[in-house]
Length: 125
Picture 1: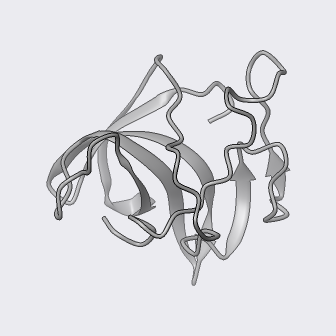
Picture 2: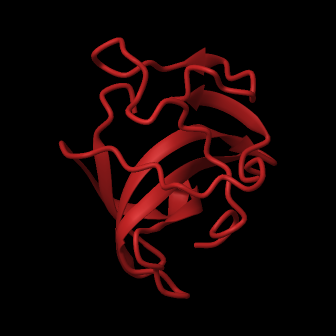
């Protein structure tokens, strides 16, 4: 996340390409709130991608890749995926993370704030 690397993995039987924005815990389970911009999903993936809530223990064959950082454009409501936020790439995180991450260049992420909030895909997999 600190280097804005894309994450490639298999999750619930589907190859996925993701940009993780928040890492943390909910009810003792490690989770990632990520923007999935390519790959498959149980209910399909809308054009352009969707926000996803992922349990880290279900991710398989995880690889990192350099490439564009995707955050989507729809921000309708705060994320509910992660209760205790450990890491957040958003410099102006409203979630009081234990640790904030800034882009590798030290400049704000393209498009400014990357607040991950969207009704679509919030708790889907």
